[in-house]
Image 1 (cartoon, rainbow over the protein chains, first blue to last red):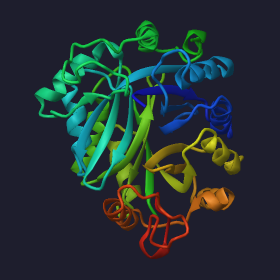
Image 2: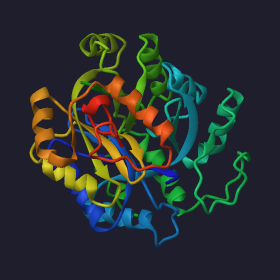
Image 3: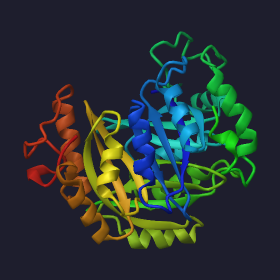
Length: 191
Length: 178
């Protein structure tokens, strides 16, 4: 539950979300949250897989297998967790603090009536920079969303002990992702 | 009746779009209840859940004037068990209706409140009928949310009772809580 996956659903055909959800359900992949919208027949969604440690035998690997089999392109981003007051402008202020760091996905992680926890999906390479900017802007409790097995110091922005092969994949592909015309590139659904 | 917006953010080539979009909503006094989305191929549409008393039609026009093409989406909500395949089951029940947006608006224990967005109010009504026992009755989001959050504070570790009139979204049995 510590990463955000962005995947592309072509929603011009009703039932695509069911196909997507069914394929994941059959492989036992439990989605904690999902969010997205379509525009011009293109429907990217962001979702969080429950067991996404990335050890090779968890649900993230199963997710990757489903994406490859069903040819759904995807990228796995790291989640920066920010605690916000539940008032107008709170999300905008946090996103402004990120400056020119692109937010590839956004989702609500939790709310308790007073505060909301929002997940901002960023490329792995910029996790440290994103944290430093948020801390400098006063978001002292911003952290990279952590897995229970994480051992690094959450306040060490330069810690990279969490980096794994999914991060390698994202960094390899995101350079091409940021250029137009990539949605049908097979590399985006291969593991 | 609460509202969802689907807004197009050209996020890939221009970092900062989410900040600008959220700032525009704030300047209109709009509080974001839930948001979800990602970009692909420089197209970044986000689904945004806002309060029911906001004039959605006026807001979409205003956002369009700020450069954010926006559609007002009609929502049907469902309480789904937090287990593999539950989203697929709900989407299968919805069948041939095109789901424009999907948002997990809240989670509580082993259930989640999922909001599906549709082009028309009639489609949302049909979706609610098809979702059957998963469906949440139409309700006013603000009152329901406040009721839900109040219940959450008083029962932090308790699983909501889906059959109790005050145990779900919407005070007085207007909706269901997760």
